[in-house]
Length: 431
Image 1 (spheres, one colour):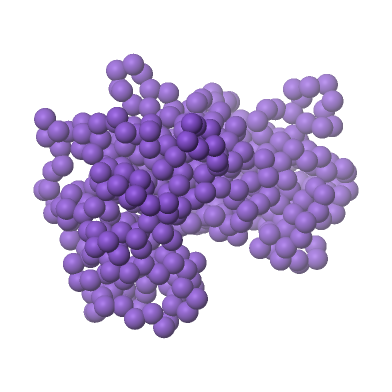
Image 2 (cartoon, rainbow, N blue to C red):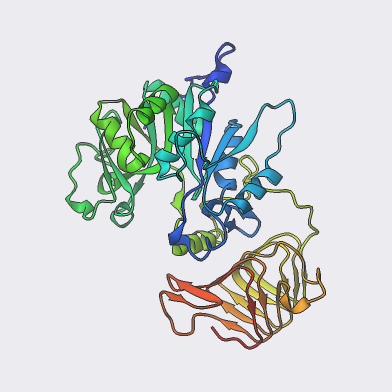
């Protein structure tokens, strides 16, 4: 989609007002990511051994030059609050902030958020006196790299009330997303939320007929650029609860100017255990689509000041090893090993994600309950959550091949074994 290269949105008089305020939605119960959400919200889940999922949208904002960020939270938010407060601290001269807005009781309402739009509606009083003319609304559980300045340029160029960032997806993905029907100029005429049979959909325009995009479907990324006035008006004149299901169709019905901004980069919804695991494994590809090593667009997180990782007599093939790890005589292949992991002799790890620990083994006197992967352990196609102690000789590999299972110490989702946070697995446990 054409965006003018020399279209500038900043000037000396209105530059501050033109920079949008950002709202990042912290999400609900996150049932599709259970048990990773057993004790934390979705954006607080660890990713790539040292980050959290909330770091992705916040880093995109900061790299785009947007530093007025509100994070809306409600469900199991203590871990997320702690990470944000310890990570994103600005000096006195930047005027930037990452501020938490939690669900709270007021004089008029004392209820929890009932959807994405309702969450924004309940915090409008905090946004009313902000100088920004635009509001960028983001999700906290997507994996992508995006320069939001291009989105804002397109939004202003089209004189849109709302601009929806979108990507092309295949038929299988389309059934899980909101599908956009646009005219030749990019204006959205219809939004079909999670269609049961996408092949029966008839669109008036879907990209260049000579392109392979014609056989694909334009889907909403859950990234919205609103004019502040339009956002306030729709939220105060309706009780619609969700942006994709309710607000956008209502705006279309009201003949508002809603455009689709076609994003041609990598984007992935990591809202399920299977998607989270696959996205983690994709980081180990020869040329990963999501590049952690791009100095021009760094993924930011908390500075922990940990020592370098140490590997003694170990064989590692295609692994990401986070800071502060100690591996002794370990064999690891196509795996991610998180912060402060201590792994003992003879352990084999294949196709696994180890989230690491919040503290080191040996911190307390009762060492058997502290995070440590013991000797001669075998872990394959699994996710080991934080602060887990695994006794000698344990085998973790979904021995029955079940797609889903609920146990006392572990779960299986999408065929992947998940050892839940803080668990102590006795020696010789077989999963």
